[in-house]
Image (tube, rainbow, N blue to C red; front, side, top):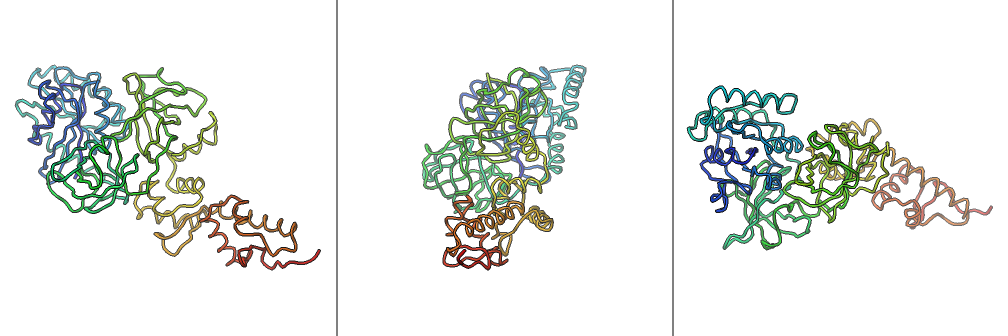
Length: 507
């Protein structure tokens, strides 16, 4: 399955095109029908000639409802940018272009609608304006299809183009860490609480336990539907409806995040890359209050600049965000920020639970550049430098890659003496950076020698005291002691650790 999202200015024909493609009216509310304008997210689906099933998210085009648009486009595979022939590119066309670029949506089809309202000469001018605008952008090679929702001229060409475009889109990642940003929640009589959202990064099945973040409420999947069909299991890249048990409708709402239990903690502070849009070069300053959008979630944040110079429009820089309330943010999440009703930029989350940094710290900037653009090998080393010890699952979650891709890289790092593996199998092992491991072995050895010099009549230092003195995590300490015993570096007897070959003696 694939997920398509519409985008474009208000009244350019997004909803009527979705209806034309699917036979489903995405405008769910009576107010939308009365006003003839989409004000919230709409949903539909259809099957392409190839047999591919497609979910469609229809977003509002009015500037007052950009927050609703942002809530819907985070998990889409392909964007349909709708531009009316009688108006051409308009303000929300530009803002939606920017938002999709910031969120990493690069696969798109540009659809010129309402061609029955203009003549051929005008239509050519509109096509030229669109081509001029997308030249030099990620959308430069996007197909442009002219279409009339009224006469259906161009409809079959659009359907064929969608079908072909999906062949060039990578299959959704399944790394075993499912997450769903909730975009609707409601109650169904006889069933209870139901939520909808786009499933990414992993599969779910009936009976699975999930956790609602940031609340930390545990729940269980009672039922799964996709396109009004019941499923026992569903794979990522799918619009889903989940019937949840153990939770009331008022305990979960749009913006909440569903994940496996106990795999995610909320955070107050993150470090991130940031791209400032060229339209708003003077909007950015240190300690700027912004609205932060990630997935279907939005909340207030304070932006701190990490580099001494103010960012230049169109250039990437690095920033820190501090949130008013703890938020469920993951490394690798794409975000958008807005202020004064304008979208001013966005980027990628690089680190969570960050400390407050000194502005202009070159070492920090180099680290963030590596997290943003470095190889997976370098990212693994950076993670181990930060956390000291990690499991395979923890690495998979932070790197958002499949184990089949990660394990060969770990083997290479082991062979290059950059990583220590503790355990018989990859799935049950702990991983520690080679540099950190041997530094701690040296620290322990030095500490024990000094202890023996100071207390020559004692049989050794109490293991727990040694761990506390050197501030080594419990899990790593146990591995270090086992390794040092096996290598005959020092020995442990009755909870006391001494240098190998040491025995109490008079001076």
